[in-house]
Length: 109
Image (cartoon, rainbow, N blue to C red):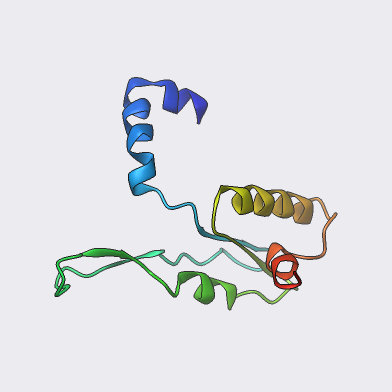
C-alpha cells in the first residue's frame, strides 16, 4: 500500500481518497463457504434526484444478519479506529484467541 501511494498514480489517487473512500463497512469471515459479496453502494441510473450512486444504508445490517457464531462471523466498523480494532479481532479469531466478535464487544458497551 505504501509503495502504491508513493507512486505518481497512487499519489494522485490518494489525494482523492478523502472524497471517494468511505471508512465504514463490514468484515465477514466464514469457514463454511465462499463469503457472499454484497455491494455497499446502490446504482440507479433513473434516480429522480440525479444521484446515480449512493451508499446502501442497509448494507451493514444485511451483512450482520449472515452471522451465526459457528462458522460465519461479522465485524462492523464506522471509522478508521473501529476498522483497525476489527482487523485485530479478526486476526485473533483466526489465531483461535478470541471467541467474541467485534459486534458483540460494541453491543455490550
